[in-house]
Image (cartoon, rainbow, N blue to C red; front, side, top):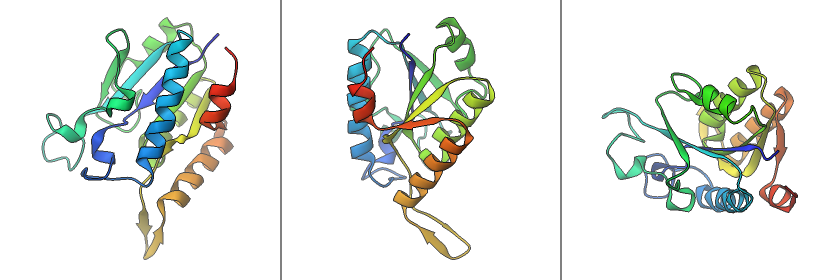
Length: 182
């Protein structure tokens, strides 16, 4: 059984010129687009998640160009789109019910930000008993800082993927995923 592909928040504000650009978002979106095309060719279910912040939220604000899903991974008319207002895609949405309706398939996750919404959603999915694979190169993270220590986005991304792997998720590359047979 093909997994359900969950595409989390690949929205314009995360790209150069947006309100909260990440490190390597174009490469991540290209990898996500390859996984999406591969998945669609096989007839696998796709669920898009779109974050909607209220006006004044800083980025991904409702009604702005930055809140729009990147065209490389835009949903088709027959694909589900869930609008969320928190990092965890399950919180306040019907994502769990939609996944149950699909037969509780494994999840294949791509998206942004590795350190926030991908992390929160994957951890919730694991807590709910889902089998989760994260496509690491189809995700991106920002540079962060804490207590005077600057952490480059690549290191943030790697640390969160390592933590998710340690929590029970499988971490794969897009090349491995699209090279797999259905």
